[in-house]
View 1 (cartoon, rainbow, N blue to C red):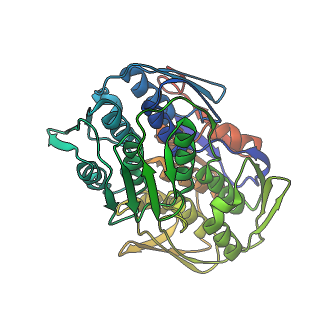
View 2 (view 1 turned 45 degrees about the vertical axis):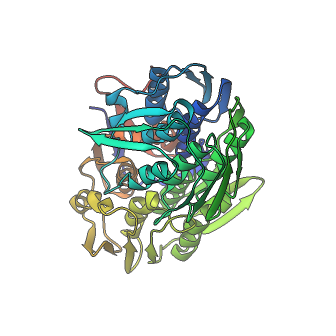
View 3 (view 1 turned 30 degrees about the horizontal axis):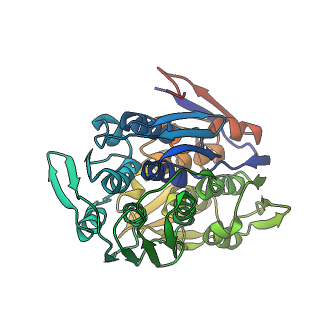
Length: 423
């Protein structure tokens, strides 16, 4: 297996360009199934999850080629049964259900896999399809859905699920009549999907708010599009600046998408400057403690929770971080404790004692964002750390070790069998 070797206590400084958003690009790829013709999507990150989704689309009949962060898709005839192994490997693959059900009238998919961070039930997706007239059957890890043509419906989500909002929205664009999604998720990536679909010929309004309206159309074409910047990648490098006592400038960034994080950065004592389309973060001499709870957007993102916990180990005093989204998100903490972190978890809340000297260790990554957190911990630690399981990191960060090296980190990748490449 591949691993990172990191020599800690290096101050990070310099300029980085943020990639397009993973959580938008994957859903735009799924949304393209609703259309017909040639698509060009710009600023697509060359990460493992995108390459997996390319494999899913090809298996469905789409021509998909990714080069230099530019994705070319050719959508003509489709089939609705993607390969079991590809769907099982990535949570985002469930997003093909809505488009294929709407376009073909049927779809069969394996229950998806992904990071082991807690329960992520599919009932909100499936109940939304059922309200639109689909017949759902689940047997032996396989989900089958059928509908001659979906019907518009008034759907209230009991929780503002990002995936369910996106899947139902995509299914609704070809449904007969109007669909209303209430208590919809409000993430910027959902706005990106709305804009992409509307460019293809859909009629959607309200994304970014709690109520989305979709008026069904009979068919969609193709579109060229540019993916929004990745706020989670940006946030990870912002926190890397703080933990390394550094100063990092990021370009290709939307500060409004980072409001909750930037508020925490100010609480920690960091200084933020936004000028000429670039955001610069200056770390203070001493980090201050904080109290934070993860929440759906525009709250503090759960995908930055592990990274922030690591920063808290180097702040003064006691910090608390409550996880309200995923019930197993603290699974990485034993790895931090191995390095010397002092953390107690009770009732989904982590109590982090600051001024914890971290020491290099052999670390194992359990999921994507935990992997980013362990890299940050290694940057702050005394001595050398070896981080295995970095295929999880490759799922969401393009060339993390190269970007950190440009900022002054001492980090190297040792390749195991295979590697990250287009396939």
